[in-house]
Image 1: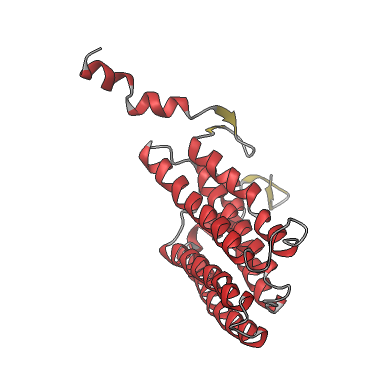
Image 2 (image 1 turned 30 degrees about the vertical axis):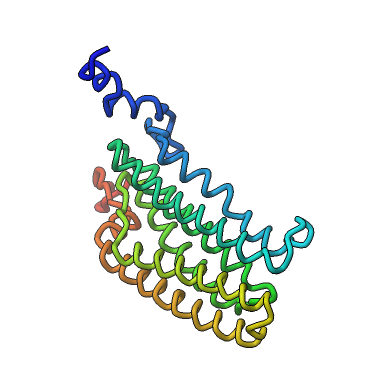
Length: 242
């Protein structure tokens, strides 16, 4: 087989075709379940493992010293999959509206699972901080879904991507602090105070990014929330809305 024939045999279209399947979109119309979307779905299902490992590490036979390294490894896998699905979608030209909905949802599930785990000892984050993450993501995700039901998808904002990076760094920093704690170098009070300040910074920027997202997309949000009137015939001097 010649080199040219081999290149034709492994064209981008054929490679992409091997990783996609036409499915029915849950909110209407056909869509493509690409390898990027499958990667995002995998991240959704493995995200709670972090929480379970943090809470039940003793039952899993993981020592307190080994726990931070296991959590960091799992955190690295989650963040790698986050970067990988976006890369695959752009590489094979398979950016879909389904992916635009799944990716932020997977990010929210992954990072809320992580910070929710940290509300338990020894980190013991205030639950209010995690509520701020949930509140921001719930509002933005609901509006994004409503807009999708109305036929248009809201693209991610740069502030949202920065928010994701800050949350990832915060989660990694808190997890890394468990290493000196497990070795007895850092006290539990220092661990809790430092973790709280780190999480507060991430929560503050998360709220800012949510406000900025709503402000920038206000036109689309208004179109999604306000029902367009369709005036029918006049009856007894009044316009009837059908």
